[in-house]
Amino acid sequence: MDEPRIRVMVVDDHPMWRDAVERDLAEAGFDVVGVAADGRQALARFPAVRPEVLVLDLQIPEPNGVAVTAEVLRQDPAARVLILSASGEQADVLEAVKAGATGYLVKSASRAELVAAVRRVAAGDTVFTPGLAGLVLGEYRRLGEPGGEPNHPELTPRETEVLKMVAKGLGYRQIAERLVLSHRTVQNHVQNTLRKLQMHNRVELTRWAIERGLDAD
Picture (cartoon, rainbow, N blue to C red):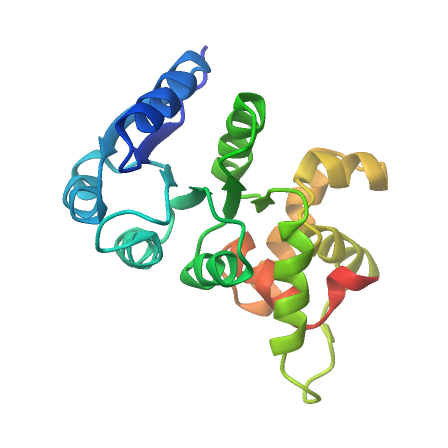
């Protein structure tokens, strides 16, 4: 039986770019359920089409990409937002991540990189253009809470090992290969860690780990 296609919405105010992204994703097997040219259109159409992944430009007519990200995730916390922007500026990247985006690609990314990023974001991974991940991780460490609770008092050594790799942005399959574990075992470790820390998804878990410097080991 064929797997259901990932539902995607594309938001960009440049018609040629928007059409190209829509075409590339459709040809790669995604179900492009909607497009929008600005923030108002995106928020008006999102509830009707309920995409799993929103591929979103930051610099769109108001409300901008950061505001759209925050509102979309308020409406549907299970949705994933992949920013596709011409800007690689630190402030833009951090604003998007703080609003809840789980991926950030600059528009110089190749078609293959875009397709892979949408798949990974849909699966719950965090994805960044090379060079931007370190910037985000460093900023979260800088903002991390000083002192206080131990880093991970309730986690087993294996759960901590998996969590460190999650914090570095590795997907389940990559972690499984590195630790010589099955994909399902890695998922179980992540689910156990989420339960122990009373969190709901990998985005929250990644932020928690980054704030405590677990990505730096």
